[in-house]
Length: 112
Length: 112
Image (tube, rainbow over all chains, first blue to last red; front, side, top):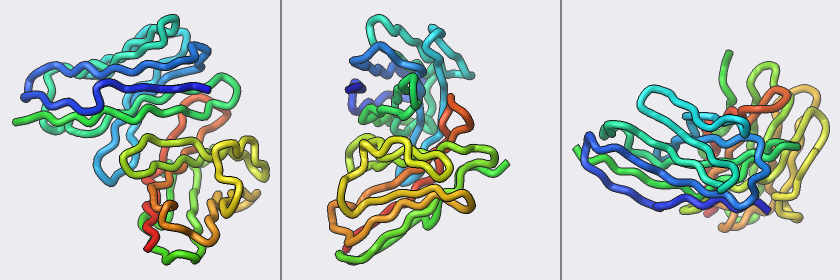
């Protein structure tokens, strides 16, 4: 059974600081890994999708890396802004049916 | 192309009533997934459906919960005789053959 862990559970930083969010998973036989953003009381917004054959993906200020062998992914957010305040979820997809196993999330607060 | 639609967005039920949650996948998507997010917890997989078929319901409680995805119309998640512990956000996701899952805004169920 895939277990996904996100550390830290919460993070508070001043505006402009870079954010580093960690995700680890127990079964390295994954199909893909996604990072989502969830605002309070809202749905999920997909930020980045990394296929199992890839090492990283970038979109604007966001960069996500994937190390399958060690079961880790890291989401970097450069030059954080108050608008980045949200909960960030890591989700791992299996190869056969693609159902996602989610971590509990990291709640980020960027202070102005 | 409209995104995944879920309705209602908020649903209030008294204990013992039935809750019906609807999910309309994105156009052309034949795979639907339901996830549940309990307060202060991560999303947990419930059930995976394709048109007229339940593929994997391993995450769904054995009693009171059922799901369907008919040939025509939305996917329905049905909860009979709701209890307070059913209060949660229920998210639906859809995908084409495979790869990225696109999430709806969720239905927030409150059981009084």
